[in-house]
Picture (cartoon, rainbow, N blue to C red):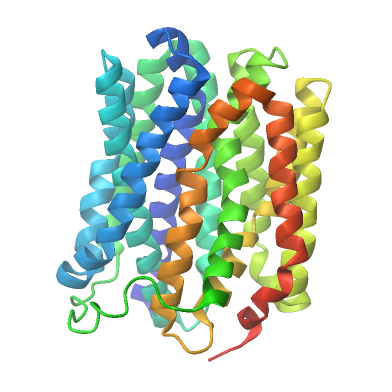
Length: 382
């Protein structure tokens, strides 16, 4: 049991490291435009390369875990995470930026799958849920990466900020690695016919709702700094705080997510959370100044925080399918929202502006609230 408790904090450190790197990436986005003389549309393609790299990597990470074991796979990708942001910042040409972004996405995506698998192993060892809090540590890392990263970028520049983030990530990973739970490779004989694309319309509706939940998160992560700086006149430090407030409030809510769900149930928690998230995005879209916009992003973080854990729990308890198959399907569709869909926002923002874009994203969360009953399986205990 003591080994499992240590592993629980090791997994938390992995989530925090992953979030820290993604948070540090957020304030690096606006300087890419003048550095390489590109528009929002081209920047959107860079983010698309990152997302495609992540989703492509997620598709084969499960097979790597089945063959080599989760601890080995998590160790490899966690160690590979540290140099990824410096690769983007040091890229001297636009093609090199695209390649570095794809590598960044692939490492982050594969580590995401592996650390969630590690969290499941710890849950089984402890006999209680830790997933919501683990995602809370990701948000906490994202808050630290964005807030400290925005300050470091303003003080010392992009290169120093990237290496500071790399040092923080490497420290967390090296401290955590010895305490991860060992696991044998999963059997591979059962994976080929059931891994992808189950024929269940209700499951794919859950996946679509997960995508609707994750698109706003990706939009705030990748574009809040640009919106605050370009349309509301915020300086580099204040612009980087948009995602920091979002991630910080998300972290606070995720640490209490299990208690909220146990008290109110999954459906009611999802419906209220989606409405709060929509209200926050509407506030950010309509805000006359950067202060109210940051407050809106903070409110949106409170609402979005528990949407994805409820979705994944509903998928894991989906009737008629093994939990792993259902979660894999919903995760693949959902993560497309946070990793790929925000790439199109650059083009939408060029045509309609960020205010209209964030208002439209709020409407997606209203759809989630309306269809919250689809997640009733999350309250079932197997």
